[in-house]
Amino acid sequence: MINALIEDFGKKNLIIICDKESLDVAEDFKDKLLQKNIESLLISEDEFDLFNATLSGDDFLLVLSKTGQNPMLRKMIVKARRKNLKVYGVYDNFRCGLALLSDKYFITSKYSNFLNTLFMMMNLQNKKSMPQKANVFSHVNGSIIRVNVTLGDEVKKGSVLAIIESMKMEMELVCDMNGIVDEIWVAPGDAVFIDDPIMFINDE
Image (tube, rainbow, N blue to C red):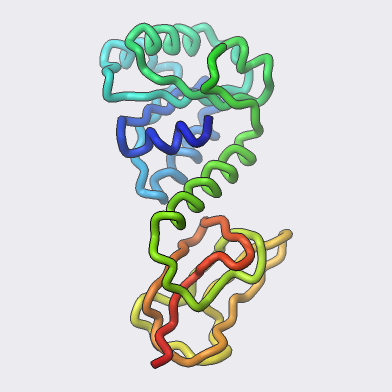
């Protein structure tokens, strides 16, 4: 389901729909997607009736729900399917998922787990498509909290290049050479694994 969702990013218009109980989660999700340069439109249940008529074949839906019991949410999903739109769902429990969707495009997961998995897989796909010109690599599994340098910066041996959160601890990524920052492969929020490329320091 997540691979299919990632493939649709950028191809069609992402519309996030949610019930009132999930509005805070949906707003957070929209903000985090925007940090990845993925734009979306958020529709809460108060706006369903107004928005139903505007759905088109250029749209796809992501449903966020904690209960699956909202009749307006179900109505929105049915209308989207009648227009042959792809509908994804993220629900807190399996019963909730069955109440709203019965096809392959829903996942039962806590929101935070889903978000971490989604961005981890997006990060991995990006890395597969980028040239691996790097001589600074992650020494832990975790997520990037801060990148302390920008392209063109001069760094020295011992400089702290980035901060990685791993097992609830902040780990410093320390430079082991003098040089100029030529490439940066990560940004705050990115998931990284041991030996993932972080940046390239030109030491010539």
